[in-house]
Image (cartoon, rainbow, N blue to C red; front, top):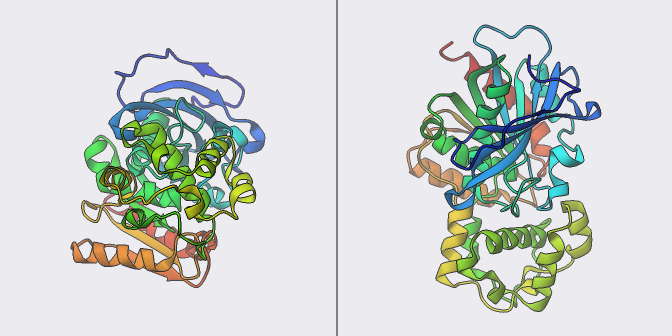
Length: 362
């Protein structure tokens, strides 16, 4: 076993020409941040594909179960976390908030758990929040990187994500077999997925009143900050009010709970100086936000809380309708709970679904 608690293994930095999944550095994860009963845990810095297809670095944690690996190696769950912020210090492997007990469940089931931070969280560049392609690539490349340093991990893996991570899991599911054909991708679970937001972008307006949702202004500000950093051709600042520019600059240093406390009373309209129906902005938002409705060649599970005020159920109902109209086969379950609570409410269903994924075609 190569992942150890006390030794940092620096590797040659290489170059951007190195393939996605190349490991640049291995560091120990502080013991107090380990999942219970993990036999080893480390932080990897690895190469991936960032916004607009540009090579990027990401970091992430690897947790190995206790005991002897099964024939073929430990099956892998690649986790996509929800919104934490866009500052480097908000990265789960930086602040230690990797797990709230949910990932420990998956390790206890006998799965290795790998958990990307996403590009720009603890690595160069600003994190492009809700940039689905870069999140998805990081989710997949995290599996490649983990297997490169931990030989007990097998090639079978599933994507699992909630909220922002649900978007990452769905985009990853639509491209996994093409992007990483050397891996044995089995399927995906996406909970509380932020979908269909791109359709609302043209309706942004300084007169937009506060919405009866949770965290919306912070999430939109994060999205605009990431777009401003990765799409200079759009010139996001021309759409922002002076207050909006102040907020975006401030949020580059705040994690989500801090941001919600500081600017949560503002409306989206307070951020804007003009309507956001500009074609260049709309296209850029679609490139970041759009969730594919085709290309799911492995089983897919969608879970949605009916009282969710972060990613409202009607948005997911439209996603379900679009997937159905496209002829995709998937499992959809709804639960009478809110956003974060959907992870717990769906746990029995999701556990059985993932078990079946790994059992198929052994």
